[in-house]
Length: 441
Image (cartoon, rainbow, N blue to C red):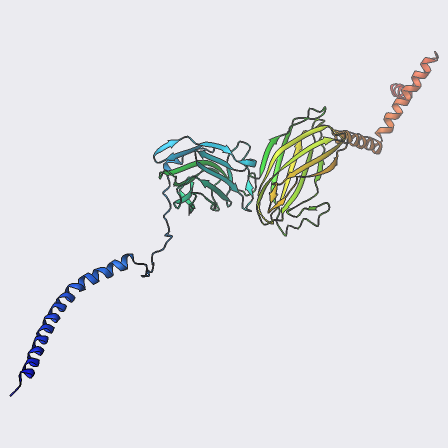
């Protein structure tokens, strides 16, 4: 028999079990409802939490396709230029760039500068008519601004659309690059087309005419300018030709006599060579010098040639000759030819080479070189010498053939007859008359 205390303990245990079962059921129901909420919270943490690392597999700078060319717009002559924003043609400025190298096209904040280079990489000034020129086998250098940042741009060559190259604008909407002209490109008039996207998100197409020369270096490296004479007596407003040519080889000009090594650049002595002429108003003088860029930066410079007489009277001058885009370690020869300068005896030639004010944090100053050139006076002296030589040949020929003595004897007989007649006495018959009389007898 179990006592009351014992039975009460058994009943309490049953109640505890019942309560425990109820608690377990409630807990199970609560846990079942909590699982979806926890999963949703985990997704939210993955989306916006800072403790989750995400691996990026996408290329942050994908390659952009070049913008399409516009062959329908490439129908301009060498002096033409057009600019289209979208399908609308807008006015565009076409001007010769600084130092006469290349052309600049502007429209508001839009700016594109283009210049040609020969096969040696030497920048070519525009021709005498202000036209853009380039060598077949050379390259075009394009520098632009005012485009949409991070957008593709491309350069094409016509008449047949040829993609010369593409690139992407930087964060400021600018780009620059060199684009090679395919070797074998036919000589003559072509068109260059720069295609991109401007800041207004419109496609921009610039088309400009240019002239391609088949032979590198000739005649694109030659620029003809008029001589500015000083009005000196004997001088003439003839022509002047400026020629810039690259110097190949080791480029060591410091060993040449008279060369100045000025750190950033070296410049040779001025060379003057006179060419006499058969004409009294003809004649020519050639002036030339060589310069080398010793720095690590390319720079633009200019030169001025002028010519005077022995006493300093101005004969002619050529101002503002561009020595553009002189590359590091590049050696270039610059020559000027003064023509129809008149009949002077002694000339003094001068050149002033003006570099930039500062290159590689070094201040620079202009340098002037001079040289003399002697021309035999007068310029027509070779003609006189030729006539004298011809006369001498004739005299020698007469002497060898005996005709010279016959002519001298004939003149002597005539002189004797004249002297006898002057005395009033009867004239004796000459040997010629006696021979004739004898023949008659």
